[in-house]
Image 1 (cartoon, rainbow over the protein chains, first blue to last red):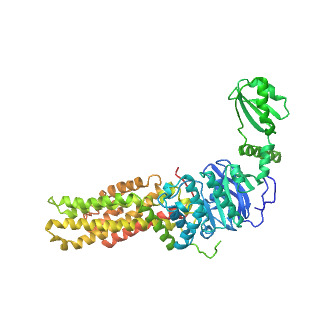
Image 2: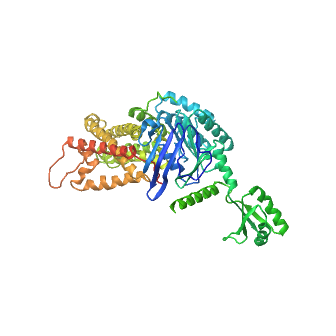
Image 3: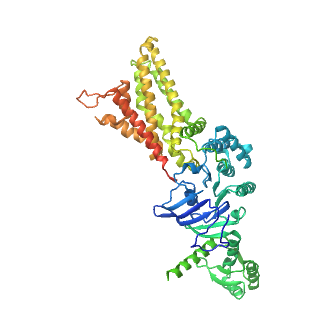
Length: 336
Length: 256
């Protein structure tokens, strides 16, 4: 993925890449009053790109726009330089693995992948050959003649992935591809996705879990409320998680005593109390690594018993909140 | 990436969908339900032998009133809706094959074997019914039998097409939609003068010269056979076009 801007930022500008394979320009998609994608502009080149966003962010809508299953309400979506909607010939060069679990339960894995490959233009014999290879790639050779109704969630997921690349597409869209996969299958699926990316294809992988994406690529686009919130390198996102205020919830028997014990420490940025639970102290810090051991030590010193210690935002949600706020602040400055 | 592979033609795609759907049907329970229902008239004909009625005509009423309209609905009404319900259309609509091929291929996969089933059922019914006269009526009745058989098969095709279309409208409960169509249009309209011309069943009966009834009470006006044939072609053709249109420009959707 050849991105110009190296660090993720709340975006108003468009990220430009060389050798664009997928391009969305001011693409919007509404479902009645609900916005799926909102004036989204994006360019994607060869390699693996992670589409990251919380559930309902618009990742699947974007994938459906890019695979010609939805027509943009506004703007355009192009793949390999051609509009996707109502472009049958282009679909020959696209592979797609949807996020849902629905499959043809009464077909075997081999039949499913072979029929799908046939529908991409291959003869029955060649489709079967390709399907066999793709299923073997996914470690499903032994189960290829079993009906998919008997497959586990992870096996179905792998069969769905096999049909997405058995016909040798140039652009592959994988919507939450690791859903339901056990640890071994995850490793295998990630290997395959990486291999497809190295072959010069454009592989777009969506997920709401950062470490899943991190295992496949360092290039990500953050999607939130149907918009591109930020894009760039995953390591920068990691830094951002560590840089912005991190909240720790501490449930204890003497919240005020604990707050007093913690408030003077340099690692603590702020202290508050949970409005919903009087026994919970909210500790804000920019140095979580230093703060986590500090809390039990301070509690011991103050004679406070800790019931639980959790971090509600030790994940992407905090980054999304942070970037959304930054974007709103930028918009506010521009409006003034 | 193999650029030389062309997108599949309509006929290729129809063939693929036909084989795919047939593979699925051959493993499902629907085939048992259809076999049992098609065996019912044969059993009824056997029972009717004991009564003072013309068994074949008696059983033919069962075909025209129930089996011909309802049996196609069992499979054809789900042609489009099952793909939406199970969301499997996301796989096939992301393929370059013409979407219309899905409707046509599944239609052929379901209707073809159903036609064979009807032929066997009707032939067996006729054979059993002919036992009444010690077999003497068998040859004499072959003409009307052939006519009834041909018309029934046309009816199966037309009703399959119509219930495919109705099923694409009522995707949550396509069979109930199809049953509703048969009860409301085919049954109720068949009692209403002139409106009966809008029913498939009346035209089938007209073609088969079997209890069609008058178009208008107090009038001997009749619809010529070619008129009924044309009506059936129109009903079936327009329904297939409608079902195909339901998928050809369709976007992703879910009924959940």
